[in-house]
Length: 79
Image (cartoon, rainbow, N blue to C red):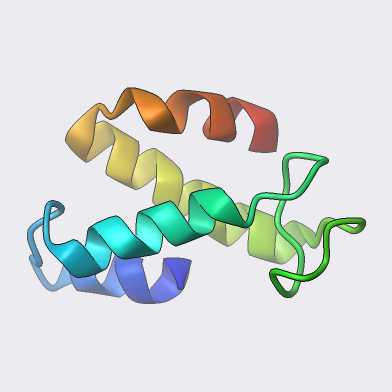
């Protein structure tokens, strides 16, 4: 999801577009208890480093564009 959302931003899709907002909200909803992201939304016990880095890259990018305060804590937890 994060890779696709990044590609949409690269293609100049507006960050307020519903697809971008849904992607962001989905990614925020599947952050696991360690602050990272697993291979699937059902994996709450193990953080996958490459998936977490892709999501974190996207969250940082969308935060720089939108300054949305809802992104601060998830970014800090994942870092």
